[in-house]
Image 1 (spheres, helix red, strand yellow):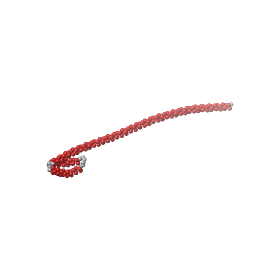
Image 2: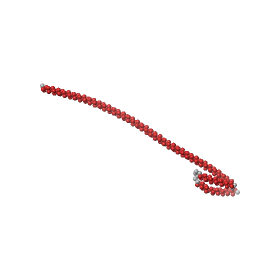
Image 3: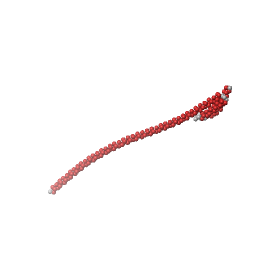
Image 4: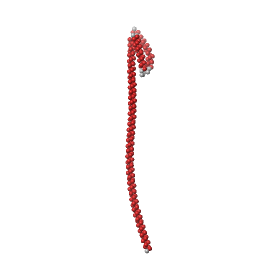
Length: 207
């Protein structure tokens, strides 16, 4: 009797394997992610387990029925594992998205910090250039003041020298005038003396 059940069980197993072969082939053609292949395989495994348990009950084959129940329990465990894997993948996806957002935020902050640093550096350069211009302008203004003071001193010195030369020339001119007056007076006195002598000589000749 046991041998008959074993042969019958083996025949049922071969029949079920042959019956599910087309479905397994189709299931393997389905994409693995996000999980259509797993879902189809679960349906096939549950159907296999249900048939084994039902046939085992009808044939009073406890081993076949227990095999079907074990297969159903294994399918349930696989379903829970698939659900947990899906939850984990979803959490990973969320975590990846959050990480990507954080990285984008960090990159944006870094870019903003670099832009702000460039602005500060540019402001510093502009302020330094402005201070240098102020120093140059102040030095140039001071140099102009010094040059103006030097020019004014030189002009005053030249003016004083010209005035002194003019005074000397005026004194020389006055002296020449006096000398000329003296010469003129001497000439006039000589002329008068000559005229007196001539008149005196004339009177003597007529006498």
